[in-house]
Length: 321
Image (cartoon, rainbow, N blue to C red; front, side, top):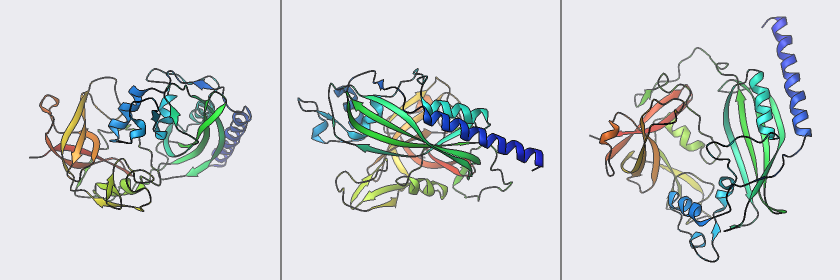
């Protein structure tokens, strides 16, 4: 890098840090109230999707919501917009302007103080707590941004979340080296350009390390298999987590043909299928190499692995002959 370029980079870094300090100093955003109160319809949808049969979540006079739903209550919805005082939106705009235009969630830690009850209306407020960078990562040079969100009911704090994203400069990690090839991984980088990256945490990293080796891994707690992965088992919460390798074979339990809106890295229409694996858990993914008109419940499928970037391999499904 030339001396002029080095000075420009230093000026940019100082500007980012100064703007981050200003945003953090502005403090927490104003509380944003959920569109709807805690309700049994959403709880039913959630527990059905996760096969959670805990009787506390069943409809009744004392129904409570699963703690993991807390963020769902205050999401803005498909057409929602960020609040004008949202610190995450402000720092993202700063980093976009500086050329760090790509983003990926890295980790999220949530704390719950009590169960939410049907009829309560939740509010959320967010503050910027840390901006660290520039850092060299496998994705490229970027900045780690951490926010803290607090959920309240009235004046009572009921939960909080620390959320971290990486804002990185696309293409800055190019090494000129191709990733190690694997006979069971299909190179889908061209067709999948722009695909959103899944968040990776300490609870899910085993799964994504497996896909890089063309292995479909299922989390296990004692004798209980669980997917999506979590911090503890539902039936055996004290068991230590490990995993088994799935056969990758299953049947379509449900599916949707997506026509609109457009999704980065996908050509519409495409099929997303929820698959019953032979091991007894359900897993979702794109169903490829198929005419959407021919997809049906009970269709036999098998896993296939798609390399969408040099360091990301996604599992998908294809019809089993």
